[in-house]
Length: 228
Image (cartoon, rainbow, N blue to C red):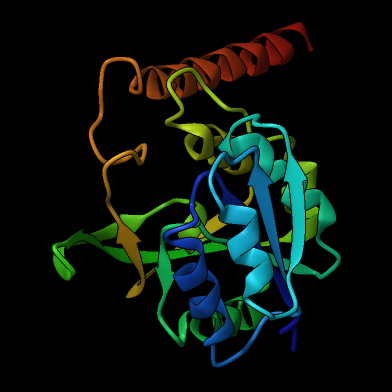
């Protein structure tokens, strides 16, 4: 039974949320072997908050390169067979990893597992929860480390949105099985300043980028088959 996993948390100016994110990982019924926080050139007190938590955390600091590149840095530091990832403003529910690890251990064909999430906003000290949905994203993902590294880098697209769409598209195209668990195991914070708070024409360029990359890969694969 495989239970050893690491958690990668990319963080940029997340001083006000990183503590709760880390504590939601520490509260897991099956705790991680390691938590890796990658501070992507924050200009606030993110690194200081992480250091002050007084729990075993690997803190990696780098110049601001984007969330995708910060995630890549964290992935390369993982030493366990499995890795999970979490955005610095999201929260795991306590049995999140137990549920997903049980499925990965029972079905060896699954390369990565995800789950549903419920979104919320902090309003005047109160949390207002909104819809729940399948979330194919960093905060819900558990994946075999070897496959994640072999899948190549997560690319930061124009506008910042769509990095995981492109990366997961490549994972699927390489024939790997991705499983969506129907239970809500993550709470996803929507806040001013986050990429998902309010989409703009500029931020949506990332989705166009991801779609274009998928088309280019299909064309290249088709040409290879014809040439062969």
